[in-house]
Image (tube, rainbow, N blue to C red; front, side, top):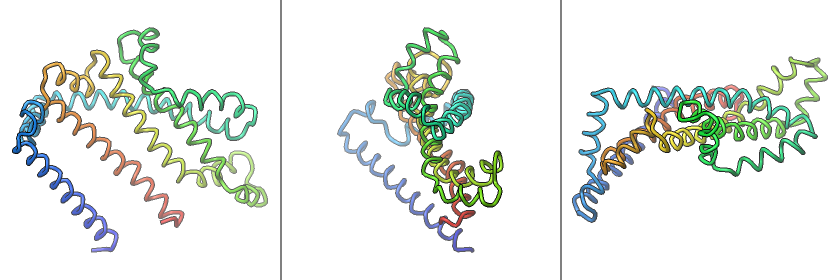
Length: 258
C-alpha cells in the first residue's frame, strides 16, 4: 500500500468515526426526548424516508432535474464570467466601470434575483436557471480576475523573452499560472450556484430537491426535511471532493505545490 493510499484510508476512517459520533449524539438527543419526536426525528426515521423516496425514484428524479438546472446555469456563468474576468484583469477602464458594478452586485443575495426572474421568464425552469447564473456569475468573474492579477509579472516577461506571444502566452503561461487559484474560485462559485438553485426551487413549485424540501415543510414531515438536507449536503461534499478536490490535487502535484 502506497503512502498516499494509506493517508487517504486514514482520513476516511477519521471522517467515518466522526460521522458515527454525530449520528450517535443525534440518537442520544432523541432518546432524551428534549424535543418532541415529530420535531426531531431519529436517524432510523430519516433513513427510512431516504429509502422510501429512493425506492419510488422520487429522490433520484429530483436530483437529476436539479443537477440539469445547475449544469446549465453554471456552464453559462463559467463562459460569461471567464470573459468578464479576463476583461477586468486586462483593461483598466473595464475595472473602473464594469468592475465597480460587479463588486456592487456581488453583495446582493442571489435569491433577490428571483422576483425579477419570475417577471421576466414566468414560473418555469428559465427563472430558476437565471437565479443560478446570477448566483455564480459574479463570483466566477471575480475569481478569474483575481487569479490573473495575482500572477507574478516575471512569468509574463520570461514568456515574452522566449517568444510566447498571442494565444501561446495565454495557453502556455497565463492559463497554467492561474489554474490553482482559479479552481479554488470555481469551487466557491459552484457552492454559490448550488445554494442559489435550492433557494429558487424552494420558492415556487418545481420538481427538484428544493421542492421536496418544501413538501416536507408543508406536510410537517421533519424526517423528510432532514433527509433532503442530508442529501443536499452529501451531494455538495461528493462534488467538492471528487471533482474540484481531484482537480486541485492533480494541479498541485503537477506544479509541485503539494
